Amino acid sequence: MKTNYPFTATCFFAALFTFQLQAADHASSASWPQFRGPDGQGNSTATDVPIRFGLEQAVRWRTPIEGKGWSSPVVADGKIWLTTALTRAASQEEQERKLGDDPLKDIKEVAGAVELKALCVDFESGAIEHNISLAQVDDPEPINPLNTYASPTPVLDGQRVFCHFGNYGTWCLDARTGSPIWTTRIQVDHSVGPGSSPFVIGKHLVLVCDGIDQQFIVALDKTTGKELWRTARPPIRATNVEFKKAYSTPILVDVQGRQQLVIPGAQWICGYDPATGREIWRIDHGSGFSTSPSAVISGGLVVFSTGYMRPELVAVRPDGHGDVTTSHIIWRVSRGAPAKPSPLAVGNRIYMISDDGILTQLRSEDGSIAWRHRISGNFSASPINVSGKLFFCSHEGVVTVVADDETYQELAKNELESRLMASPAVVGNDLVIRTEQSLLRIGND
Image (cartoon, rainbow, N blue to C red):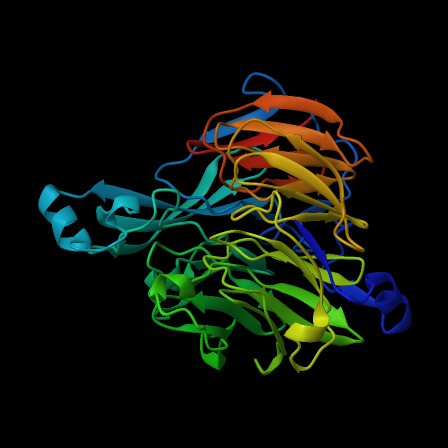
């Protein structure tokens, strides 16, 4: 179902302001420093990335990765960083103690102990240069089986790499040596494990802490780890605490020359002043929660998924002040909306892949559906756009490549190892893909 609101995005975009993403120039192909790449939107301008590959085709190297983690690889200065978690299986006694009478125990799993690690891999050779043990967690909380203890993607900033493990801690490492610079821990109960990735803007390292016990955004001084500001999320009307959690990663936008951090959460999406953390605007998107996808920018609008229970894709104007729920929602679409993968914006086209593999192309101006097509598989990884070639990675280990076009055109279907839960990186004309077992660099000879 699509709902239009009495305001056209075209008129708004032309008459009110010029709206654009403020991030690193995504024409730069030498790095992929954060979740969803230099622009935070999953876009690359590389022109010679292979679209046909497999474990025996176009693989420059394949490096086994110990442990388990869904953090995406990030790349700069010829080094790839990712996180992982080594777990010890819980005994029956530990399982009973930790799950007890938890009403969600049937959809949680528990480890006896967890070792949190950061890995640095050489881009040219695939050799592991740094294998850094950051912490030993002797009494880890239960997580959802689709999650890991190392799901947030690191972020690179100059000679620093920031590794975030939610409630278990945040580390700043020297990107050359791997030595810890500082560490801190922000307390929040994620209920089913961490998910939101850290984000760097200026001197700030921004963390989203949308737990079941409290919901807030916090900024740390990236050089010292000292807290600079903390802003509470808007009140949530749900009485069940599980409906208050969320796991989205911020994006940075510029509205009339003013930067904003835009972050979806349970019930609300908000824009914040990154310098002070002050809330600029808020929109009540409904009763969605466990919101994992990041928002995207298209046609002057912020487009995002509302999360569980019944996800919707919603487009909003980001130029408001205060609660602008009744005036700044432009359209919303429920059919085929994702709960986990982020949408992808390519010009004025929006692509969304539902968790069960329905790919939809929408027009950003009004949310109308141009076409829909089922791709086999189940999906959590956020897709990427490489010069009009769209890559979708499934749990089953298949990467489907689709053309950005007015009709569905499948360019290739490539089989790798299952599972694929991390979003790929693009560096130069190569793909860096993390599977459940390995890290692969894929490129043309």
